[in-house]
Image (cartoon, rainbow, N blue to C red; front, side):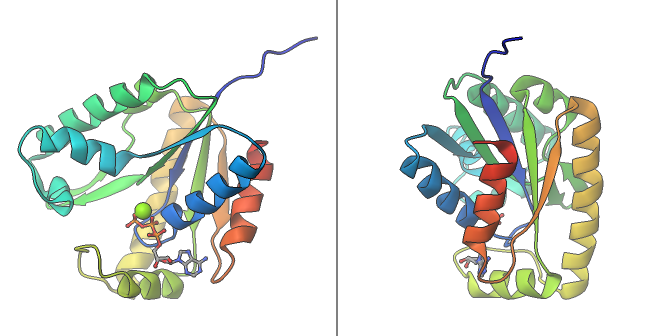
Length: 195
Ligand code: ATP
Ligand code: MG
């Protein structure tokens, strides 16, 4: 029996500082070497572009907007993503966002139904490593960083991504981005998804 090769829309999630963007640059390098065409989308950056059209100036202010406004921006962003047609699309995003009212989903059901992902990749690392990576990176206005908070966020991540798996039926590949092992983690992802 013949099956058509389907386009891949991969959603990569992980808490801030776990190394998603770093991993994705490595994945792009590998795929370019194999002459594969890939479009990497940072959900947060695209959402910020949309928000800028509405007057916002600081990316880290996004998560402080009224929740209903953030949810509206999420939907507009998802619709933009759904219009892309590349063979491989990888979305760099968060499974949840820390807002003053509490954690809310980065991938609520209505957004997943617009994007229609084929795969999820959930990136994690040791809490101590994530802590150090956040401390190193001073280009961002991060929320207060404690080891206890990072552990709690990793817990919430696992619940949120399970919900995504149930809603969409798409598989979730869990990947550990160990210290100094970006290449190893990137190769695992490429092989697991068959990119
Ligand atoms: P955010 O959600 O805030 O965008 P992120 O998950 O994209 O965060 P990165 O910006 O990729 O995280 O990485 C955060 C920091 O951790 C960077 O300084 C990066 O160089 C470092 N880092 C990422 N992966 C590793 C690794 N495997 N070993 C050591 N350092 C790493
Ligand atoms: Mg990033």
